[in-house]
Length: 119
Image (cartoon, rainbow, N blue to C red):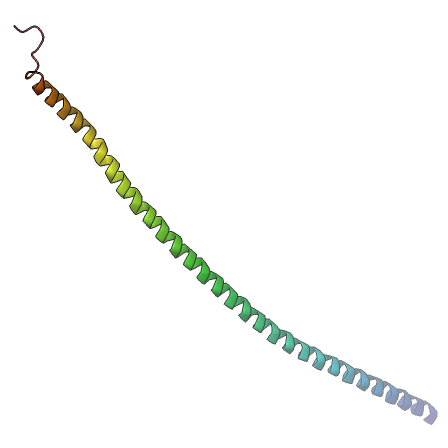
């Protein structure tokens, strides 16, 4: 009987050392993974910060471009308004010039025209 108990104790001692070694190995792996996740986390935060700065910089460029182009469009609209006013004025002067020409010619040629059929 004592021999069987001794074998069981020896078996348990071997098994307990194996379990302890395995737990220590797993703990070391866990600590290693935990350290790696910390490093990855820090790296990700830095990269996200860089991307954010780049996005802000690009948004500033877009705003500047938009403001510049808006200014150009406003200038073009102002120029078109001036041109439209000039052409509108010229278009209004054409009928007046024709009417004045007819009046001047009729007065230079002898007065107002007489209606047809009157003595």
